[in-house]
Every structure is written in C-alpha cells, then in structure tokens.
Length: 387
Ligand SMILES: Nc1ncnc2c1ncn2[C@@H]1O[C@H](COP(=O)(O)OP(=O)(O)OP(=O)(O)O)[C@@H](O)[C@H]1O
Ligand code: SF4
Ligand SMILES: [Mg+2]
Image (cartoon, rainbow, N blue to C red; front, side, top):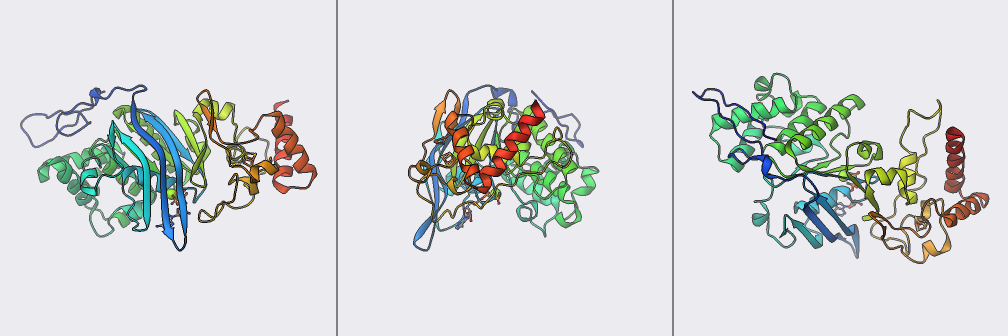
C-alpha cells in the first residue's frame, strides 16, 4: 500500500511512500510468511551478587514479515528485557546477552551500538512501556519529533515539521500543528502515548515492538491506541511484537502468541489454536483471569495464586510448580522441555486436556491444594455455563 502525504509551502505536491521519507515504497515489503526476525536461544542474565538474575532464559521464535506476535506474561516475567535484548538497547552494565537474533538475515548479537544504530528507527522501533519516561519532559513535542526525523532522514527543518504534523495526524492528535509547541506534561496520558507511537513510526520501521503500549490508560483509550497500532501495522505492512500482561489484548490482534513465564516461553501457538487448544496450565490461569462478558453476573475473576519465582534462585524442575493446579512430583524434579505438537509448542509434563492432568487436578483438589480447588471449581462452573 502506498500512502501519500503532502508537504505544503512548495509549488508542487510531494508524494512519497511511508516506508521511508526518501521515496522507498512499502510495497517492497512482501506480506506473508517470509521470516523477518529469527530469535534463537536468547539469554539475558543480570549479574547481581553471586547469582545471575535469569530474566530471559533460552527464548526462540520467529516473526514473519507483516505479522504480529503477542508476548504475554505477568509482571517480571521478562517481556521488556526480551524486547530490549532483541533491539540491543539493554543499557544495564551488569547484563550479558547471548544467543542469536537475526534480523532480515543479519546477526545482531555481538554488534556494537554504533553498528546497531543503523537498525534502530528505520528497521526496528519500540513504543516504550511508559511514555512519560521515554519522552523528554523539558523538550517540546515538535522538537522531539523533528529532531528524530532530521537525525535519521536528513530533512530540512521545515520539511521535518511538515512530516511531524502528518505523523500527529496519523495518530489522531487533534490540532497537530498547535500541539507541536506542547511539552509532554501538557498532554493527556493517551496523547503522550500517541506521540510515542508517532515517533516510533516516524522512520517507517519494518518491525515495531509495542511494550505494554496501553498500561495506565483507561479502557476506552486503550482500545483506541491498540486499534491505531493495528491499523498502522496493516497499512504499513509492518511486523509487530505486541507485549502485554493481558491475554485478552492479544486475542484479536495477533497471528501468534508466545506465553512467557520466568524468562522462558512456556507455550507458543497460532492465536486461534492457543485459545481453542490451550495446553499449558499457566496459559489457562491467565485465560481464567480475563473478565468475560459471556459469564454470568458476579462471576469471580480467578487471580493466579502465589507469586512468580525469584529469577536469581529458580526452583529445580518446572518454575510454575508452586502455583500449578496440576502439579505432580515429576514437575519438581524434571524441567519440562518445550515440545511441539504441529505448530503448537508447550512445556509441561501434564498438559491441559490430557487424562493425566484431569486425574492430577482431582487428586490435588481432594488433597486441599488451594489452586487446584479453585481450578476444579472453575472448570465445573464453565461446564455448567456451556451445558
Ligand atoms: N538491571 C537489572 N538488574 C537486575 N535485574 C533486572 C534488571 N532489569 C530487569 N531486571 C529483572 O528482570 C526481570 C524481568 O524484568 P522485565 O522488566 O523484563 O519484566 P516485565 O515482564 O517487562 O514486567 P512488567 O510487566 O512489570 O513490565 C525482573 O525480575 C527484573 O527485576
Ligand atoms: S503440570 Fe507440572 S510441568 Fe506442567 S505447568 Fe504444572 S507444574 Fe509445570
Ligand atoms: Mg515490562
């Protein structure tokens, strides 16, 4: 698709492809299954005291051109560190990243910041989790946008300003020209997040990381921002990695979902099959914690009992064992491998839906394990609703 913008103040209308403000059309990006990003066995450990904090611990996945991958997990599961490690923007001096990140065939791990700079903005960009910390509070919005454009696109001041206005229009900021003079604190949270999206889209990246782009926004604005991102993604044929703690957010906006727990992918599948054939107990717990309009009034939301493990002292075996309704002795002895059933991968000894899992749940509930009693009650009430 070729989207045009006009630069006023010129004798002629200038029309350019949005894939680069230098005349490269996005139509050169093939949508489909060609691999754009390939991550293999990625690990980022933070060295604190004697024990490494294993924030990302052997993660592998691919992202196809123009497709969307959802990365879902609770707070502290490693989502932000994973995205930053892929982009090479982990600034912590105590971090070590190993493994492989291939972007369009180029290996990024081991590149210097100077070498990576070529990829930032024009190839990969990120909408950060907190717009207030990613925008400079003492610099006007207009300057933050135009400086970015001028640095990457070698534009004149006037040209960059026209493009900045166009970008603010794309992200639906009213009176964009006037808004260029605003400081971040003069805008609402939703508007600041739109500005961050505009900055990330400014150089028309082929891959966008959106890290919890709607945290701290009310539900209506959340929907607007997510719809805006999805729309821009489709129009630009841009691939996107949408990071969130909310499985509901990625349900309708992704091609594939990777569920991450304690720095590892525990389940990964095309979106439809993840929901129709959920295999990992953690994914099921996340799913049960989403409010659903189909449920009867006053249905209790199921919080996941317990807390994620300490990443500097992970237990032997499965990291979810202390919270899992299906837990069995083997889970505390042997760490489950990520096994693939067709395109659906999961790491669990007793996958949801298996006969062994059903027996384990009944036994655990009878033995008084709180999470098992809650899961058994939940399953019964679901069966009641569907019958
Ligand atoms: N510089 C650091 N030194 C030590 N540990 C760190 C550092 N940065 C991050 N961590 C740890 O890495 C783990 C993963 O953090 P990360 O920010 O990726 O979580 P997250 O899944 O993005 O959580 P949230 O949903 O709250 O944003 C956390 O336990 C965090 O404390
Ligand atoms: S059944 Fe066992 S292996 Fe599977 S998630 Fe639960 S504790 Fe982990
Ligand atoms: Mg985060």
